[in-house]
Length: 59
Image (tube, rainbow, N blue to C red; front, side, top):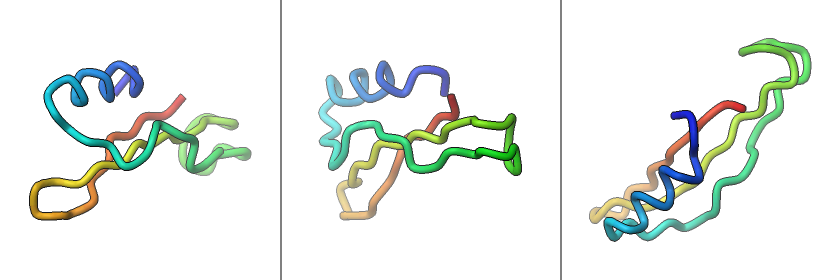
């Protein structure tokens, strides 16, 4: 997803209750998983059964 903040806002408007704001969970300093210094951002929410789900992006 290109814009995690917009996705969070859209899902929130549809009634999804997030348990966290979008935040960086990993910075790939040496380029192991993507381009060097790429950041992975996630925001978490729960589905109706209580399972934790997330939306994610790399910046």
